[in-house]
Length: 232
Image (cartoon, rainbow, N blue to C red; front, side, top):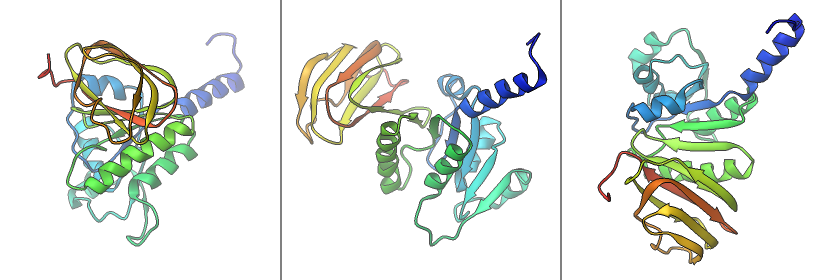
């Protein structure tokens, strides 16, 4: 950056750091794929309790490690001894994942990736993560969730495109009734469709490449399986 003062260079660096994406490492399953590695490139990391094991898989060192540590393997404490830890009591009013999100936001995060947020043995946590995904999107944050094999994206009023491989499966789960739902570049397109709450109409669609969505009103998530070509 020739010609810039030291103060200006520092301001640019600080701005870049505050805008960088944060990945929250959660306790669900995570498979390292080429797609996942590309999605996480340039991210900073915060681990929530046992989600730290994914740092080993990804070969990263998180900025912070939070939680009550009731689901953390002892070997991780030795392996990541240099990572700053914030311990919370088990009797707390928020999940470890929510604490990690607040820590990322306090560091200036404007986009969040939740790795290890889908599947696992706790369906209550998995469902909560999807609700949090929708809530954070309403706050203006760019967010998505991934297990490496499955991804979740919020769908809000407006338009968006999701880059999916041709032949991969995806579904839309409505948290409310949806009006004006349009799906383009998919095997089963829709145009201005009204989806009643609880309907299965938007389950198991097939991408023809990047899929375009638009919605007039309602809240939903898109669940995609980019490596599942069983519908092709």
